[in-house]
Structure formats: structure tokens, C-alpha cells
Image 1: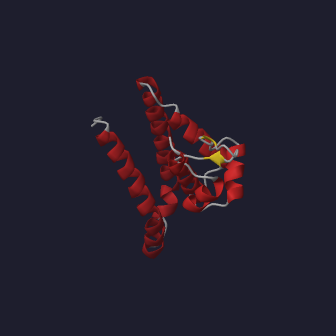
Image 2: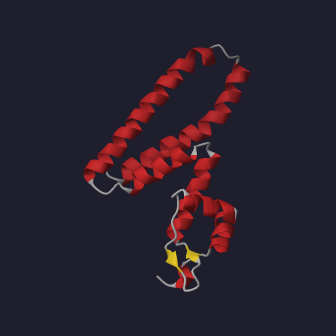
Image 3: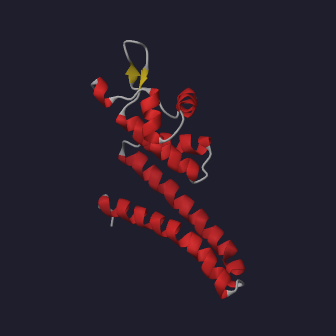
Amino acid sequence: MSDQCLYRIGELSKAAGVSPRTIDFYTSIGLIEPERRSAKNYRLYSDETLSRLKRIVQLKQEKFSLDEIKASLAGWKKVSSQEEVSGQFIELEIHLEKLQREVMAIEPVISQLKPGQAKQVFKRLIPQTAACVEALMLLLNKGGFM
């Protein structure tokens, strides 16, 4: 890999839209790793790290904790065999079942809402839910599972 494909902290910071201190912190807790060091001992980060950093930022915006993000990224990084993929799908299924139970638990409350109130609630929920379902469907179709 040439130096042209690698970012120093300031460059990575700018590309990802986070502060250099955030990159230092994420590096110190193991969320990201430098690809290597330069001759002058600068930490150099790859395009893959930039993508990972952007995913971390997205997950933070979705209110995931750093521990949850670390576990999620570690889980997907180690997926390399059919058994591990099956394990990930089982985890997704368990998570979806949990979400279904939570929806069933709030269904009585939703049914008591006035039409205008319900419409406001669904306006906020539906885009994220639809995006999640669409992503799962794309994943399943891409893998030839359906």
C-alpha cells in the first residue's frame, strides 16, 4: 500500500468529519487501528479505516454506546465462515424478535392515540423501520437466501 492511499490523523479527521482527538480516543480504545507508521512515526490510516470511522459516527448518531459499537464491529469483522454467518443471522433474528415484542407491548398505547398523534409517531418511525427492513431484504437477496 502506498502512502497516497493512507491518511494522517488530520486528513482522516477532515475526511470523516470528526476531531483529531476523537481519532486518538477511538485508536486508544481499539475501535480503529492505524495501518502502519510513517518514517517520521506518524500514524497512517487506510481507506478501510475511514469507512469504519464513518460507520462509527453513524452508529453514534443512532445513539449506540461505544461498547455496543465495538461489539458490533468486532462481530462483523470476524464473520468469515458459514457458521459465523449463521450465528450473526441468529443474533439478528433474536434482535428482531425482541423488537417485535417491544412493538406488541406499545401497541395498546398506540391504539389509544388520536389519529393526528398516531400520524406524528409513524412519521418518525416509518422511515427508519423501512430502511432497516429494506437493508435486510437487500442483504438476504444479495446472498441468495430467498
